[in-house]
Length: 320
Image 1 (spheres, rainbow, N blue to C red):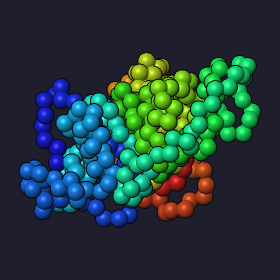
Image 2 (cartoon, helix red, strand yellow):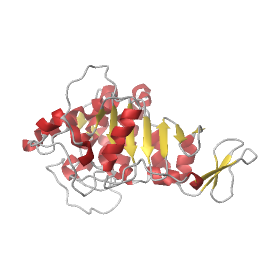
Image 3 (cartoon, helix red, strand yellow):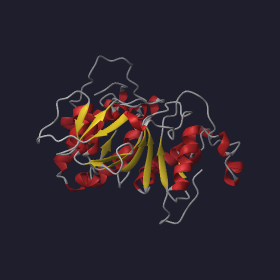
Image 4 (spheres, rainbow, N blue to C red):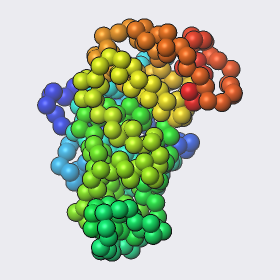
């Protein structure tokens, strides 16, 4: 349950996979007890690790959805209130912790890692990409022998299959997100990435590596900072919205009814720039063009018009 704090309070946020197993959450029958003390030993391992990181970084507060939103309030009243604030929660956080492994949340992300899985070997090379298998060049005169695909593990992990996580990725203003994988921790900030297994090394122009390893999906997410939205022309912003919908529609939701709420925070940011009327996932000023959306495969679900009108992509749970 979120309590009012001074406006300058610094805190972290957590992006994680809920999984299918039951775990301790904030409910009507324990919210008073949680205000006194949360039994940390009963939390799933991912939460325990996140609390440990929060303390070690010198912060007192961390926002975790299932511990800050009452999960069984009548008519989802608390969820509706807090979901509307999601944009502000992630925008104002100092740092977001993303856990791209442990889809059930019980494995945590602070695990023992084998440093030999990423062997630094100094190699002199010309100014061109290396072609040797499993050797990746990250600067003009250094290469590293990579025995597993960090980029694939991070950007194609279960965390980035969640629709709600897209706005968590994009709304963090500082875009400074430590991401825990099975093999290492990485700190992503704008276009650079710092990996724990390559000590003290920032990979500049990481977008080139991301596109080579994971395709344009990961790249365009990294290169979509919000100042571009605010400075771009309106017609450009409409096309940026198209990119967001393309990414979002490929991700999974536990509840199809969240199709529009899960992207509302991003829509709020676009609305600040466009000053346009938002209409169930589309914009009135670009309505004619945006109505030409199409699903990438045949309908696998029956359109739900209670979720969104038939002319909206949100009426279907398929990639568009």
